[in-house]
Length: 431
Ligand code: GDP
Ligand code: IMO
Ligand code: MG
Image (tube, rainbow, N blue to C red; front, side):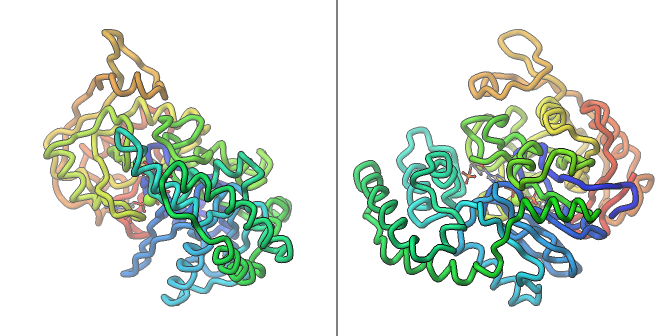
């Protein structure tokens, strides 16, 4: 692994997603042997650029781009087999080898079913006030069924083909009542779903394994493991900006329940944050710049969703929110990404506190009613000009850019050890 990192590492987002986790997991996996996804589903979109090729992963861990690396999909992930096989076929078509040699899937992971996607879309469509702005990948309804238990279907169920038919028939019968009565949606056919999922199960069987057991085994053998977080701390179902969150434990804290790794497995907690803020979907966003600045960032940063192509909402860096996430996740070092996007701005603002009902708030409150009302307090920093994507050391950056990095580091209280100035593997500066 990159020399300054000894031991195992968890990579996670410190904002509202799309911080460049894909790029950094790929970077840190250079000398790792195992990559583990522990949360979320095909709602994630992680980009990796290798030479002139750009790849997007949704369910596959990013270690698939490194020959010899074992990739594990943990129990905390919800798997849409249609999306998974589509992704595998696409990767294989582009020359990326994927087989049980380098991919294992937890038998404990839950399955996204067609009616979950239908319910997700129907809920969003019928919600007053525009809904949550989900990716409509069926994520919420699948995790709801996981907690509900009696209506859930796991990867393990696919392996018990004799019982699968009855199980799907029962669950679909119940689900059809919800679809038709609550959402006025057409009922789904249990037999079709059974046959499709039976075939998925046959294809998935060689990949299915006991991922928790494998993680422990690799740990005991001293293999280097990178845990790949999806989404971000502010989208975490418990600690994020509820209800405008996703439905999994997607801060660093979710790695234990989502993979089965015991706490002592991980020594490095690498939080990823971009040099500004973005958010897709609904929810309060105190530093949002719904103006020329936001547009400038969106175009330069290509801030359009990797999964849904929705334009991302853009704004200034929010140090109050990032400090909250960094503290929550026990962050030991930060990677700052997309610094190059801010080039060309005369002045750059950073939110250092909030004003709420006449008082200064220095701590983030994950309470939508409070967040919707806070007024950011900004510190203004000097901008810089020129393309910095060719810089290969921190010292080569314009001094204003260096100062910007130092300011963020001080506001958050965690060292920024890596600075990313472009999507390429080598546009990565280690301090
Ligand atoms: P993730 O979900 O956190 O993996 O992030 P996404 O892949 O959804 O979005 C990040 C986007 O920024 C991708 O298109 C990356 O290729 C790109 N990217 C990553 N780091 C940098 C960087 O330092 N500069 C620029 N310009 N692009 C970057
Ligand atoms: P990566 O891993 C950005 C957001 C959605 C929506 C909310 C709930 O690429 O950083 P869901 O479909 O999960 O029920 O939607 O969460 N969201 C993300 N935003 N990046 C992501 O993942 C996201 N995953 C979910 O836009 O607001
Ligand atoms: Mg993304």
